[in-house]
Image 1 (cartoon, rainbow, N blue to C red):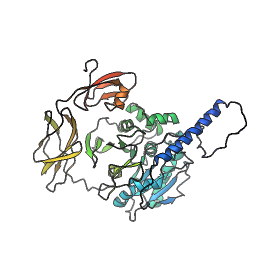
Image 2: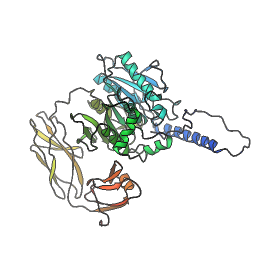
Image 3: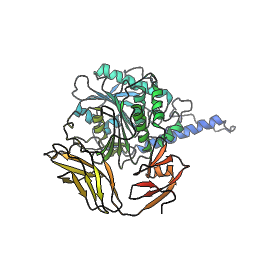
Amino acid sequence: MQPPPFRGTGAPLSRTSSAPSADPAPRPARGVWRGLLSRLVAVVAFVLAAALVGPAPTAQAAVGLTKVTDFGANPGQLNMYVYRPASLPAKPAVVFALHGCSQDAQMYANNSGLPELADRHKFLVVFAETTFSNHMSKCFNWYQTTDIRRGQGEAASIRQMAAHAVSTYGADARRTYVTGLSAGGAMTSVMLAAYPDVFQAGAVVAGLPYGCASDVMAALKCMDPGVDLTPDQWAKRVRDANPSWSGPWPRVAIWHGDNDSKVVPLNADELRDQWTALHGLSQKPTHTFVIGPNSTRHEEYAAADDSVAVEVNRVPNIGHATPVDPGSGPQQCGSTGTVNFQASICSSHWIAQFFGLTGPYEDDRLPAPTGLAATDATDTTIRLSWNAVDGAHDYIVYRDGDPLAPADATSYTDTGLTAGSSHTYAVAARDADGKPGWPSDTITAWTTGGETACWTATNYAHVQAGRATTSGGYTYAKGSEQNMGLYNIFITRTLKESPVGHFTLADGTCS
């Protein structure tokens, strides 16, 4: 996501402007200086957008899209493109895809993997596209009040596309979903907030909570360092967007790279807070485990009927991008043709699965083991145990997402570890064919020994350094989850790190 250019009165900036007079002139008034600054920022943002497109895509056949021009009044002046698989069932589901800044519909179609998933699982994809006339960096206007309200601007245009997909392509109005990257992810939040009666679920990739900003400077702050509000405060901003709506609220999947420096990972937590509060759920996950080839950390927040209302996927080792996994495997998709699509995990596969579009092929897996616990530890070993699963032939233990040797019993001793180190474990039952079942919740365990480290800094600095997390305006030490007080630059605390990755409060005692 690019820093959004200034707009002055709110009208889109022109890409060209008149050259200033060469004649001497009086000192410009304050308003003129503001206008010059606005133009300068717009130009800088435009240049940054071009730079972040990255290298040209590798040679590949472009995905075939059909442009639709008569989908409605189109108050937001967006473009509509449709990807329709060769064969579709009656009343297919439809997924709306919203590109990131400096991108367009074709680029998003070529690289995101959504058309591949549509071919496999037979659903429509509508790619909404903004243009330079709307925004100098081709960002959806996720922070402009005139574009994020029900019945107005870009949000209303996307709503008209949804109605057109139902009337013209026979799409199922009860299975309409939306996803997007960066500014498109923030616009996904907009559509879920403004039209909860239209979109049953959404997936926000590297995006932001609804109502985080209403002007340029606030938008920049939301992106980095982020805005930390209480869950109830976030939920109120959504309710205020549609006061007559009493529910149900859409289900939401959140995807964010751990190394995202443009839209910082704090936004994933704030999105979680916003949507769990709307669903009346705790901000503590019901289940946590790892998924995909890169051990993405997956958190589920289940409703009373055990359906997943909110999920958070924290993708390791990627920045501000859509995670893709090029290949022809059943969980692979996408292309890494630009820097905004990074090889990691096929997020579109898991998003389609969250939407309920991939079929029941994984529903017959053995259930997840319960009761996983670390029962003993030495400087170099950690011993684990768990409850038996009916029908299990053996078990596979995962350390930090990587599979270890199979275990015939309901216990396992992990050896060869480093003193004072921490590791995350999960376990899954396997059937007689060696097919793993659902993984258990993860636990973190530590070996003994190792050196003690002490860290004294502000709560803000602790969070930025990864020693603490924040939720609801407060700061919590990683590992111990001790409350450190308000998340700001005014409170200074000392944390003791022992073993590695586990922090406890140690004001005045750490040495």
